[in-house]
Length: 377
Image (cartoon, rainbow, N blue to C red; front, side):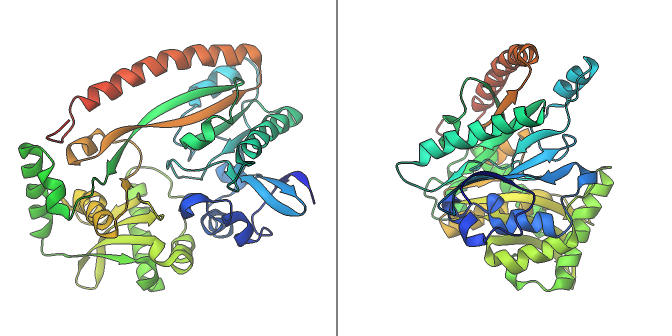
């Protein structure tokens, strides 16, 4: 078994072989996370997801891979190409299915071209991106998209791929001894506002705690999932992740999953769910059945910052969007994606649009940086 293969599931792939390619134990491209999405009912063809993972084998050994999907829509991606799809379909083309390299439902930057460390790493990444283009052309697909790429992956995408960036808000650990040391680095106004928000959350009479995923019973996971589902329902969105998947994460990832909780007696009334790697904490899901001033910020942001400081993590990425994060210590950070458009004329049109978008995006980022909450800018 040598060369390029596309796999319709990770079920037959040994976890150790896949995870040997994942740097820093990044949770969102780990075998446990991706296989759990497939096995626990989160990825279904009627949701637009069909696993189509790219594997590169030599001597029967997996030396490179990319978490890849045939997508029948653009839901759950967070790099929005709806307008591209509309233009291409108005012109009489079929935009879907397309190939997507990503971690499903996870707008989290991280490795997408998974390779073994060493002198051949760059060559292997190049082989993976070439294989993606070749497969899209072989299948007659409109496009290939690789979302939320790290810097290490970018050079593997040649001029056929269009570059796109966006802005997220990330917190960086400057060696803070504790949460008060972090607050001391902020301007006086921002420091006062955060203390005010935390005081409101703590005054509500709820029990607040942060626990590892391996400490929860199945009944508690069902409560946590119900809050996640309730929040999606209130916003008119579809909660794609299942209760089985939440329970599975707790069992398989253990303390790699962290949950900030608010309890009213024995009842969990609010939660924020995080995943972590060796270097970073990632905020993912929030849910609440009560309205308490400051509680969202306490569980989603401040508990995460406090945990990252205690654990010596270098950064905390709380999720997509949200300018309100800036005032709470999170600074604008560029994220990167790459896009292969098969039709040359369509590719030129998208490239023109992306050039205009990039200029606006950089101006926006510079404007945000001018409003840094830190006393030393």
